[in-house]
Amino acid sequence: MPLLPQRPCSRVAQAVRPHVSLSQRWVAAPGGQDEEVGKAQRAAAAGEDAGGQPTIFSKIIARSVPATILYEDDKCLVFRDVAPQAPVHFLVIPKRPIPRISRVGPQDTELLGHLLVVAARTAQAEGLADGYRLVINDGKHGAQSVYHLHLHVLGGRQLGWPPG
Image (cartoon, rainbow, N blue to C red; front, side):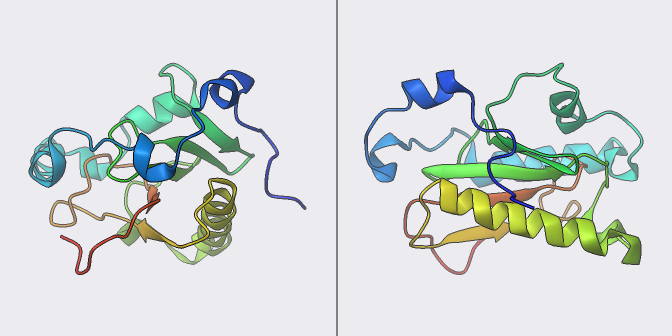
């Protein structure tokens, strides 16, 4: 079963993508780490970590909020991050809402593996042959600001270590 491209990028997005290197097209989103930590603390304080409420990601899945979609299948959706922290920054989310990685169980094994395979294939399609970073934030101390499981894939430049 081929994983990419079941639902390819829109032709408009492909047509307007400039022919420049990854490092030339990236501009860091304002706010950065401190803003994300603040969002995570506010989301946890509001009880969003309990799940059950619609998130921005469930609205993207329902197409009531626009996103630049890179890939979609019956299990997941991949789209560009609206506040990129690297030249290439996209998110891989399951269509079935799972609030946090710490809330997964044995029944989620196949889905989690699928998300990782889709992340790797999308990274390849995005030209990240030199490597990339996968990040899953969990809870307030992990700076999770949206309580719908999501994998960040960041690349296109040398990433520092240690993170955070």
